[in-house]
Length: 135
Image (cartoon, rainbow, N blue to C red; front, side, top):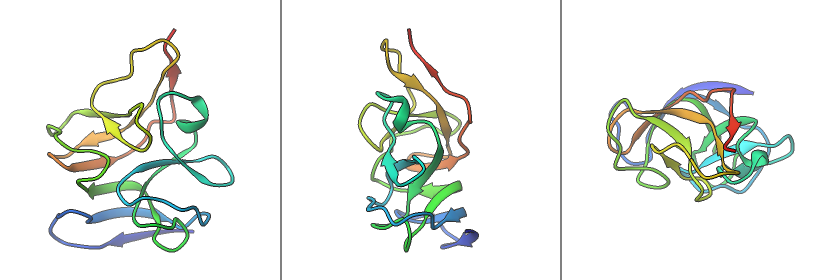
């Protein structure tokens, strides 16, 4: 089930707007980035293919089934990302659930664009379906 939902008209910490799914009932941390692995949501991490491939979502609370996961749209949070300049590409970092503007470059790490920075603590999540491993 996917719903389009607007929480706030003005962005502030914890606000979001976009397409939300209530898939599964995984325990989550609001603001962190997750990947649906077919049975549950796992924190995205550039260190393993299993944690970057699949549906990407930003947790909107502590449970994916009741609070939802933002799969496309805008979010603002001081958890999991921040210090961005609008327009920068965002990638999974090696710290579980966090996003970074620096593409992973270490051998064995995986690179996947998750979205774009819309401001300091604001993101536009629009994940690419493509990813690759650094060799």
